Length: 170
Image (tube, rainbow, N blue to C red; front, side, top):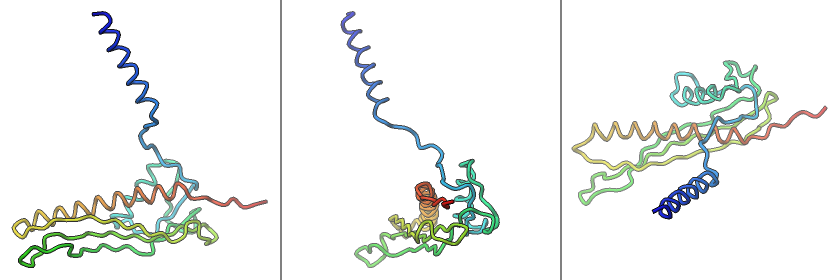
């Protein structure tokens, strides 16, 4: 019986060591290479509000209300949401939609030089459709766009984190 207990203990230790050595770690706060940023989206914009909240939550980067006082400026060059028919049923009625959320942005420094060239992020989701569940499908569409917006903010944060800021030579 003691041999069985020894094997169980040893296997638990091996599993614990294996899991701790795999490199898994929760994603922490994003370290941005600048101290202040101006986001070219209004506070009334759902995307702008969420992006500014994530930037403020970082704790090390100030979101300014004036582009002239910021170290970098995030310019939004375009934001579009599209809903296209993906497939039809045998009666010619819509069965699926394709939802697309596109955002094009760039990052400039105080001098107006591009730190991050114009970048486009495009997200897509499929939405099944049933004529007898129109209200539920509209709610699902809203949730899918909100999910895409959150993913978009996360991708922007990751791209801002890897920006290389040029330090002026003296």
